[in-house]
Amino acid sequence: MSDTAPLFFERRLGGLYPACPAAEKALSAVTGRVRVKITRTQGNNKRLALYWIVLGIAAPMLDEVAPGLTDDLLHKVLKDRRGLVKVITLPSGEQVKDYDSISFASMTEVERAAFIDWAFNVLASWLGCSVEELTREGLVG
Image (cartoon, rainbow, N blue to C red; front, side, top):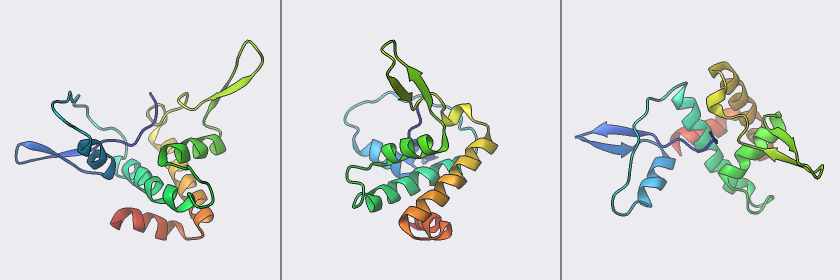
């Protein structure tokens, strides 16, 4: 299972409404009918949603010094820096990184929280702000 921004929706008035920026973006792309699979959420979903919101804020801010950086690519960079990728050696001897090898779903909540706390510290240092400023922007932005 690859890591992607979660699409959280809330039930209101008999319908499902986006509860995070990723869900709003996904819903805006919908035309016609779509298939939806309802699953229970696991882990600390507020922390996970905040992580993806912060990546969505940090990536454009870092794009000036790292053109082409997206929230998905930033997530892969952070996983790589933390050592959360499996290196696979091809028959040719060339090594490639499997960024989907260690997903959030395979981590315990404690491991996931430690990674997210570490990621916030790294992003704050890259952006020249405090973690509190970074996460507050994610909460109110």
